[in-house]
Image (cartoon, rainbow, N blue to C red):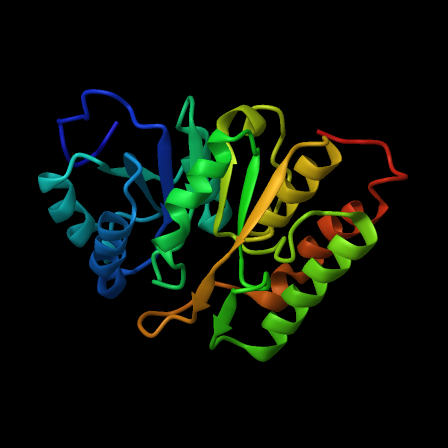
Length: 247
């Protein structure tokens, strides 16, 4: 239930937007406006935060007072991994979209992502590296590693996306109910779920997106700390055709 508004929509939408936040006061209003202006599919927004002192909260509460689609959710775990897990388990049906509040994701493709979900795809990946996609800014090493991981997983393991590590993804609730999230770091969760969907034989789609590095606030991405966690799921993906399937 929303921590900021007693009102709820008359009918729960099929699309649930999960956004983990950490001191995104400068970005959250334009993030919200991006969703509202670009997404026509009925949706709600689950704003998952760690601390009551988070600078995002005053902005989010102000928006929630006017728009009951905005729901504040306290992180039941810790950090970005806890926030993602907390947000993703709340919807009971429909589709779960993960996106970041730093304005890096282009929400202009969300309606098309949802349409693919309605066609039976369990995972829909917004891809920086598909034809028509692009990445603007960001650390060169991080970009090289993610591009290489996505390309090699596609070629060696048949994972049907060039951008398996991108967190801007949509998942069916039905698929999420079949997997145990085992990630221990943070943003590698997207890679874990993509690999597991592939090993289950689920349908995975991708469409191009343009990713833009943040211009305000501080990134919470810790490449060197999380790299071993990415390698775990990358290895499972490459070995997947020979290894026993896991859930």
